[in-house]
Length: 177
Image 1 (cartoon, rainbow, N blue to C red):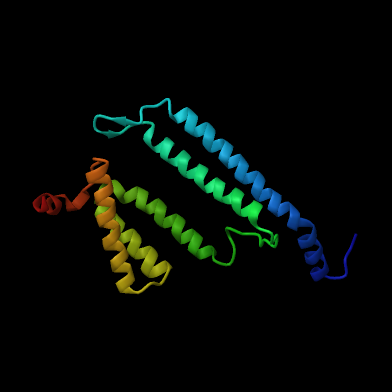
Image 2: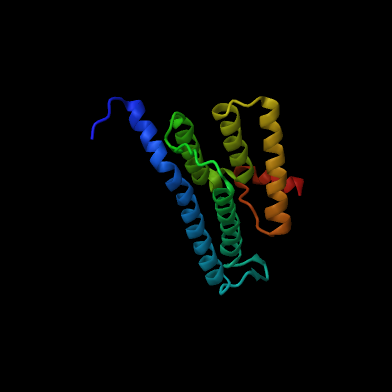
């Protein structure tokens, strides 16, 4: 069946796909919730905490709880939302360059993390993302970098007792301790 214009075709697609999109959110949220419950029940077999800190079951349990919480949010938003006008989200939409810059910078972060150290890698990564990709001011970029370094140090070193790679800054960091 041929329509006389693209506008008519788009209107018909939206009219017929609106109820499906709401059901799709409910179905995908329920599937993610079920997956998180299975993941949680299986990860409880692993030890959660060991003598030196988090053990093999720590991250699967925490991530399954996070996944379950987010899937509940998806389910509640889909069921409570009376409006069914959803725009299709495209991961490679008009901001393709940002997507690729984020992907490349995360890959580079993983490659140089152990060599140049956590702190310096985090400064370079956040500086690149905030200043170049997101075009934030130097004040915002510096504030986020400082807060991120302090919070991640407190969480990993003080709370979880996990040492972070020092890299080329190890002489400086050892003098500070």
